Image (cartoon, rainbow, N blue to C red; front, side):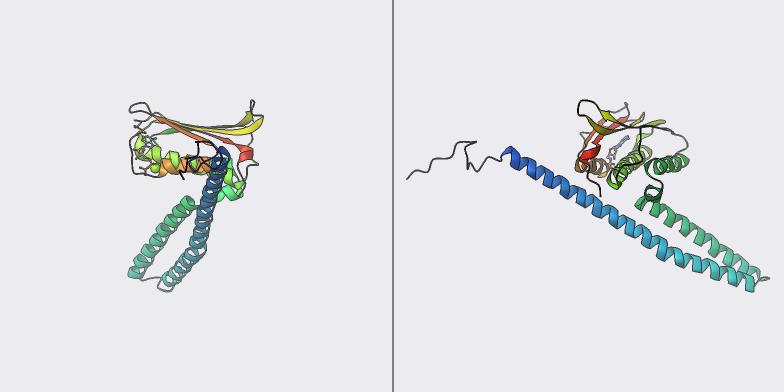
Length: 250
Ligand SMILES: Nc1ncnc2c1ncn2[C@@H]1O[C@H](COP(=O)(O)OP(=O)(O)O)[C@@H](O)[C@H]1O
Ligand SMILES: [Mg+2]
């Protein structure tokens, strides 16, 4: 007997993926991505703690031993020069560890919250990029977001600033963060824009980098919207909107 193909949209049609199924899959993907970012952040936090606790303790021991040797051979200039050089190396390793820890986990985020860690990020970034004027404008209340929002916003600004210093050749950067009531939706929304007046680029051209892709994925995983506008000679602007209650807390 001839098997008639089921009409597109008819019950049982194998080619049809019903909107509800699509919606479910979309939510599952979003949860998966959220979980992936959480695992990544947890791992970074663990690494940062290990670096601090393990390496930090060995460096302190080396410093103490060096000090003791230097005191025992007080008059010996060779020993003095040698121990001084060890102390300097220990200081340098300490700074490197501190920088890596800072990249891995913005410590202030856990203790002082979003605004203080962003101010810290800005002052560190500005000290490394003295030729670029960087202005942060923050409007609204930022104290009671969950860890996920805090880390999401922090990572987006961190990656954007890193791109500006690596690629933009800008002289001005404006970061605008606004927490307000989204009147038509009746919910709270977090708006973020990061704008630079640098050389810009063609966003349609594949770069091979994962920074912009990662930012977009993070925001989508958090239930928000991400857009990037750039053109050669016209700077770059990133816009993010995050509906607050949609974001699940870690
Ligand atoms: N603010 C910016 N100004 C100019 N070019 C940018 C800016 N941000 C990103 N780009 C361009 O987009 C590319 C992709 O960025 P990204 O995904 O972060 O990867 P990466 O920084 O590793 O190259 C960069 O290589 C650069 O060419
Ligand atoms: Mg990058």
